[in-house]
Image (cartoon, rainbow, N blue to C red; front, side, top):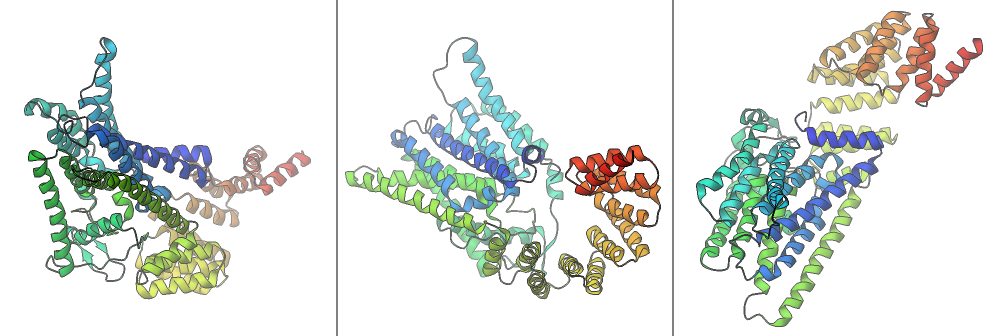
Length: 558
């Protein structure tokens, strides 16, 4: 995540304006999606102004093709995860900058009537360097944007003419942006993963072959968006010759072969076939990073087809219009086509609305997951968390135990059990489960922290101090661990060390509001009234009633 500066900056700006109020985040995500839809429209429209497609019989309907493509992109329910799931702004924002770069490049390359003088000379430079800048922004948002120069080169050598060497030189600045994401870093992202139910380790090659069925499923979701799921369960296969792997590979090869056929048809027949072919190529190029040799713990994620889907929608809209505008078609066919287009967009919009209903809250979302992935442990764990937040501890415990039964030995489940038992006052079971979590993962800082808090609550301050120190050792910037260690020191009347820890905690995280009040108490106990007033004032200004009362009490004494 640390390399995704642009996406993280957008979240930082949201936080600055709205804090943790999710409305602002959703508005920004929706705005990104709408702009991305407009860019799909522009890419399709500008493509018909290129030298190769300028003679297409579809040019007169290029506006309709562009509009239909954009509406399919905007209304399709498969986009829900990239738009409604706030964190997946990385996917949608990358898509926006990626498509902006392509659109600006096409604008630069498409011949037009340019005004004379300085304006006429500056505009092309603006389009070109705007494309390069957008490429940089895309790559600083998410690493899968590294395919962007390749996709622009495909457009260049498919839709434009001219001396090859000169055109290749013009692409060099765009290809130079690939250095932003070095190949070594990209490969280091790979790691062995364990499947939640089989426990099978997956190498790069095994991940690649298992992506063949995943990509086929993406195509199926684009055609028929039924069975959408935040957390798809997936059976890992170990051999290329497993029937599902082999059949999926052949299906994908057939789709690529169809793209090749369309490309060949465009040479001798209707040029519009080439745009349809490019849409399919777009899909495979843009999905290649996340569905190839770089393993990920999640085999299928719907947000991954946000950007690839744009190509499929342009291809589908082009072929649809081509089919209904062929010479010899009856006049009524075009009217029927308009009705069908409208019906498709309305149907997809209704489906998107329904799918968003599943995302209404955590319980509805994870209930949907466990109903569709009943053998996957993570859904039960997350649903347990949702019930835990509502204070329904018994229900949460049932779900945690179900998760543990499906995938024994998960440190996160033991931690969640320990957390809930502690909240219920069952400290023996809390300590037992937290200790088990630490046994599974000896560097589990949060488990050390929670166990330390539990020890502190039952008066075992020595064990609590040891656990807080181990939490800090495992996670040196863990502000809450410093804050809680300070509480142990304070309880032992070691005010100097308590003050030191609490100040360090606030330096790491100024949002630890209760720590200001604690510091005020510690400074007051150590006789530094001025520092006590300063910290009680900070606590009071942040809405801490105890801070306000303590501040008032000091002022009355004065």
